[in-house]
Each structure stands twice: as structure tokens, then as C-alpha cells.
Image (tube, rainbow, N blue to C red; front, side):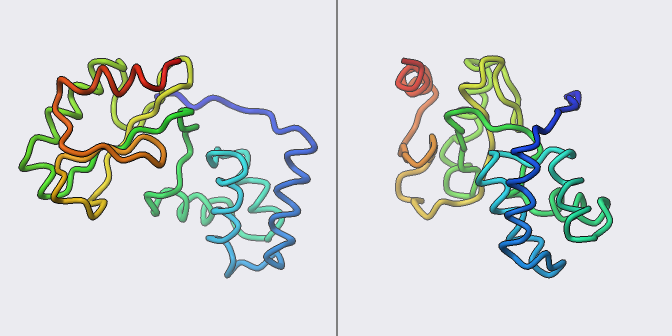
Amino acid sequence: MSSVKIELRQDQVDKIHSICDLFGNQEGELINVLHKCQETFGYLPAEIQEVISEKIEMPAAKVYGVVTFYSFFTMIPKGKHPISICTGTACYVRGAETVLNEFKKQLEIEVGETDANGLFSLSCLRCVGACGLAPVVQVGDKTYGRVAPDDVKAIIEEYKG
């Protein structure tokens, strides 16, 4: 996975600055700033992290450390329809791995990647609290239960149109 250098426009830099201002440019508010920036831009590439680092006067390495430590932050743009496969114990025991492998095959991407047209990204998560429906797949906010490898193609097709 290669890192692509992105150019931030002035309006984007201004938006990051206003988010930092919203949280008083305080180092202790870094996680809130990162959440709000990711909510706004969809992900947190190095360029956004650098702007945050300058604005709240914190080393870029420290910002990067927080972004990479917490699994809910991403430095890769998510697809329009992020797909998450639960790999918690109940889902795993009931075949989540074969479902995950079918998504990887159908989409031709690995976990943590986004397909070429930006429609789908693939991730794993631990327990969505629907163990009775295992294995569980989430596409955006929609949850699918008792998913079998044969269901994967239909789930993907639902979001292609």
C-alpha cells in the first residue's frame, strides 16, 4: 500500500483550523479534534495530521502516534460503502473467516483497503452485539445476520447501483 501525497486546499486547511479552535487548540483535546476531522474528511492522511500538529503546537509524531494507536482512526480513505465483518468469537466459530475471504475475492481487495473505484472498503471488527445472528456483516449502518459466502455477491450488488 503506497502512500499518496495529497494537497490540501486553503478551505480545507481553514476547516481544520476551525475544528482545532472549536476545541481551544488544546493538546488534551487531540482525540476530539481527530474525531471531528475524520468525520469531516473521511480519513486522516499525514497532511491533515501536520496541520493539526502545527495548530495545537504538538509534535507531528505524537499526533501520528495517536492516529495509529486507535483502530477507529484511519489514514486511508474509506469506500462509499464500508464493509465490516465481525470476527468476534461467535461469528468466527460460525464461519466469519469464509465470509471475509469471499468479500476479499469478490472485491479484489484485502482488509484495510478500498477498491479502485472508491465504492467499497473492507475491515474487521470485534463483536457488534448480535451474536445470535452470527456471522454478522455491516455495510455502513446496515447489519446483515447469518451471512454465508453465497450471500456476499448479492450484498455487494445491493450497493453497486
